[in-house]
Structure formats: structure tokens, C-alpha cells
Length: 268
Ligand code: ARG
Image 1 (cartoon, helix red, strand yellow):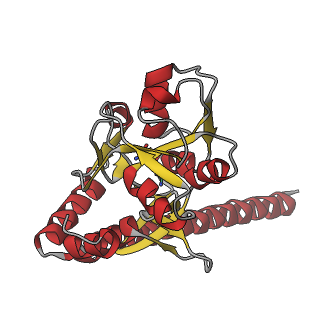
Image 2 (cartoon, rainbow, N blue to C red):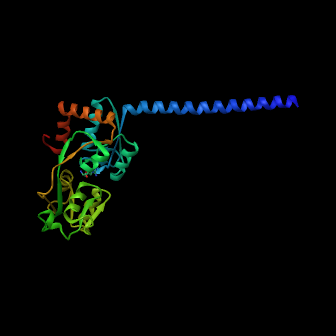
Image 3 (cartoon, rainbow, N blue to C red):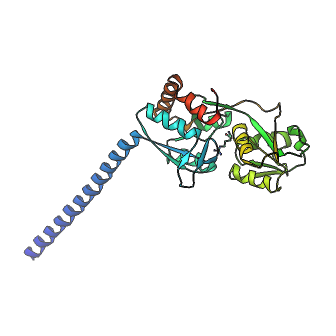
């Protein structure tokens, strides 16, 4: 009786000890993992983008993401002694990725708007843009209001969509929302939509690539200046400060102007 109980007690002790040990191991592994994680995170700026908006961002055949924005964020990171890791998230995916912390920042020709500012923080503006209408060359459209009754392609969730909704109402049946801008342009080319409204830099870039003489651009004086900013999660001051500091450095040392010239052929 006595010996049996002693054995039981011993076994119990062993079980408790090994459970304790296992727990310690798990805890230390977690703690260790977290530590190296946040340590390396601090040196790597994880950036999301919708890499389908040339010349700001695009994905090359090889999968490499390039463009004006990418050069800008790389230069900012370099100025701050950070490594940068750029990933294609898509447009809606970009906002989600910033929300969830999957990326530290988003650079994607993102217009700083009042609405977006409620949920995100933005760097100092780094680029000025405007909406621009793209139509077939023989189109009779010469202003935004001429698009009334026509099918208009926009990228969903962009300021292009907003200006069209403002002009014709949120439920305007002619509006066609696309996941990305190239999708809208493709449909314009095959005549499925009558016009595309998007940022001027992108529309002008497409003008160079589309068949010569087949398309034209139309401005509208209701289009207001827009300013692009680099987006972080609201309150992420640590990352935002670094981005703003790096942006300032590259604007002051001429790097920004060099990048600007490379893509737009003149001084910013
Ligand atoms: N500037 C516009 C906006 O903020 C369009 C940006 C779209 N960017 C992109 N990479 N698809 O709504």
C-alpha cells in the first residue's frame, strides 16, 4: 500500500515536472520567436501595392514589382537605413493588409482623401495628380457631363469612381467598376465601355502604349487636384516618422527629382 502510493506520488511529480518543462519550452520558443520577429521587422519596411497602375507600379513578367512609387519607397527606405520588401496586394487588399499589419505601409498612387484620413495616416504628399477621361478618338465627349448615359469604366474604390458617382449618382447604371485599371482599359479597347476615368499619369502612360490616333484624353474643370501619400495604419507614428524623414531627405538631396525625371521626363 505504502510503496504503491509512493510510486504514484513520484509519477505525479514527473508528470507535473514534464508538463511544466514542456510549457516553459513552448513559452520560450514563442518569446524568442517574437523577439527576433520584431527585431527584423524594425529593419524591414514591408510595403503593399496594387502593382497594376503603370507607371507608378507594375509587375514585370518576371514578377518583379517596379515603377515610380517603388523607386520612391526604396529610396526612402535606403535613406532611413531600412530594407524594403514590396508585395502585390491588389487595391482592396492593400487597405486590408495595412489594417491587419501584414504590411507596414502602402504606396500605390493613393490619393489622400478626408475619408481615408479617418482610418489611415498619410505621409506628406509626394505627387500631385488629377482625374483624366480616356475615350476613343472619334468620341463626342468633351467634358465629364457628356458621359451621361454612357458606360464608364473605373477602378472600384478609387477617386476615379468617386468623381463619376458625384456627377451621376452612386447608383448610376452606366458605371462599371473593375478590380484594377488595366481591366477597365482593356474593356475600353474592345468597346465594352465608352470611357475610362483614372489618374492623369496613368491615362497618359496608356496613351503612349495604345494604338496611335485611336484614343484621346478629355479634361474636366470640375476635377480637383489630388495628392498622393504613403499610407500607414492610423497611429503608426514610428513608421510614418521614418517615411516622412526619408521622403524629406530624398527631396532635399535630389534623389526624388531624379526618379521623377526617369518616369515623367521633367522636373517635379
Ligand atoms: N489615386 C487614385 C485613388 O487613390 C487611384 C489609385 C489607384 N492606384 C492603384 N495602384 N491602382 O483612388
